[in-house]
Image (cartoon, rainbow, N blue to C red; front, side, top):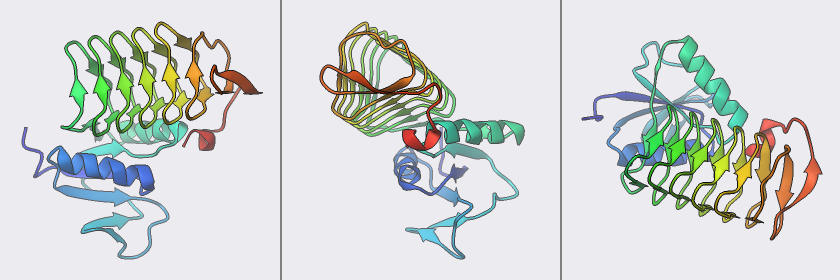
Length: 215
């Protein structure tokens, strides 16, 4: 499909939004517009405009916040406005046989999604992350740069897995969990909270983790 004539509205203008735009450009989009409420007059990223309100006509949009809860809000806004929500997938990534990617998700450069792996809606599978065969990643979760999910790992909704973390095969992680960067998870995690170390242990309990901690 030729995407060069499709106007893609990038919802946000933070660091992750610029990464999303880079992958979108690699995937063939050539008409990019950023929208951020904090945009300055006539602000641009390279040659792409940054507006503080949405254009009258929106063909496609993409969720571009690194914050899990904020991406859910962006999706709800897009659905309400009946916009087409694009999944942005790098042509330099690997999607194996039987892998599925949910609406509004992002797959970065050099990421690998294994056979029969399932990625939910509004997820981030960031640069160089490996999601191996038969894994599942719940809606609005963020698998960070160079993270490894071994086979049959199950990750819940609104989970943040920090850069370089390793999750052992067949481990299950519940909703609303933060895994610290570089951690090794070798057993199931059943409760919300912050976990870090090798092996990972709970370092903070919380029933609800603010979205700002997941960016």
